[in-house]
Image (cartoon, rainbow, N blue to C red; front, side, top):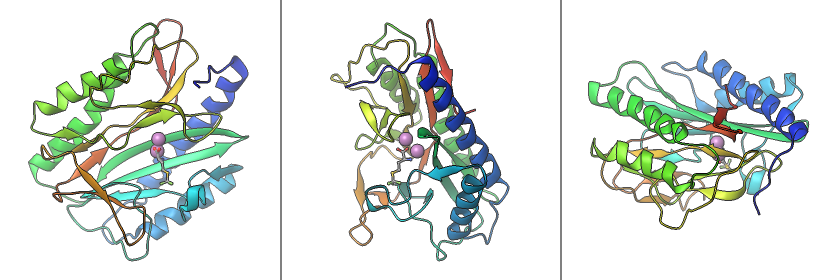
Length: 250
Ligand code: MF3
Ligand code: CO
Ligand code: CO
């Protein structure tokens, strides 16, 4: 069941989303060669605590940390660790979800560490652009699968692919609500968009044509590309408004 959010809920979710975006901005200042992702996790935890918020991922279905940190061929759900030390040429997605006054806000970005080859820089840029290509088609009255279509059409031009095994989700009152949001063209993801819906747009883009992923049997969380190609992701929480769409995680 898709929850249509009322004015009061929207205000609460907006605050949570703003805080998640601020937390991500704070984390960006601490990304450098030699940094480890456990340290980033601590910074995020402290930042949320200082702002009277709770990390939504901590203990969520047993996830052990306050952030997801997904490096290079890791698609999503990377677990922060002292052993993961950022090196020159890495790309890292940092995914922040906060709970503030009971409301959820969810956002992520992929950052470049040091210097990367031109093709990697373009890849990360286009992964971000892909998210906006999707967001820009959203408005009441259209079917949700038009968003995935816009994303997939855009990234395929470059020989990239959209991960199908994971997608966006309704968010706000709970972490993961209906609907499931496909970031690729799905014939079945035909949800009619209405004012007051809030969900995430979070395409995971693989640099190769192979969109297949596998989950680590060791930790049960870390999702990697099967062909070890790079994967990049950007995520915003958005609100369907009367005539358009508004990005809440700004
Ligand atoms: N923040 C992720 C998302 O965008 C979900 C992480 S769930 C976790 O939906 F358990 F891996 F933390
Ligand atoms: Co999300
Ligand atoms: Co997220």
